[in-house]
Length: 240
Image 1 (tube, helix red, strand yellow):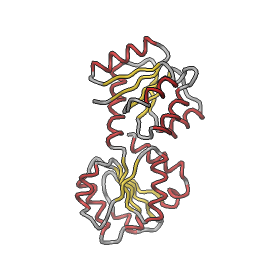
Image 2: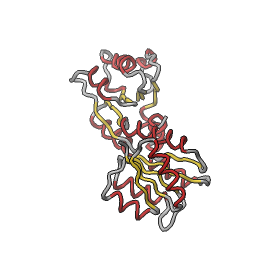
Image 3: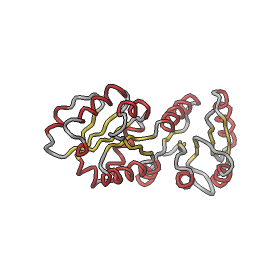
């Protein structure tokens, strides 16, 4: 059963959301402020935190930052009746949080939680690349709030694709020989709901021969040099 922590300084909000989530068979915990939430998380391993943004003595952005530092795998949904400024929007993007605009129906919250549950179970990116490039890609993936697994070309490729359940594959085109370029076809066939980011050098003629439905081709030099841009592309795909 998914454990959900609700954080809000308004008791009626806590009560309403708690009742609604329990009716959908979630294990619900409640806190009325940030310090109380952090104290509770020290003893209860929750899967998802739903927090209001405007609270005292600790606002939702600060709470989300502390939770992400201490519990990096936890999914976070922030609630607010107000629009975000540019700095706040960047914070939400950096922390890989979802956001709900108040007022919302319990059914909207359930849909948001379902999306977060899918991310939690499938928050891994499968990567094929050389060691140096792979280490850089790992930094980008983890900065975006996800985890990375390595595709081992010396093992059973098809079994790795099927067992991974990863919604995203990042393939360094420089690591693909003409012979194993067919890996892209294997991903398209065995994991049709997954997306592929192919990092290609300009002028790579093999790229024009690919026709996979969920393939996005990115310039490798741009991906390597523009960290924030690369993180945003990963989040957009993983959070779709």
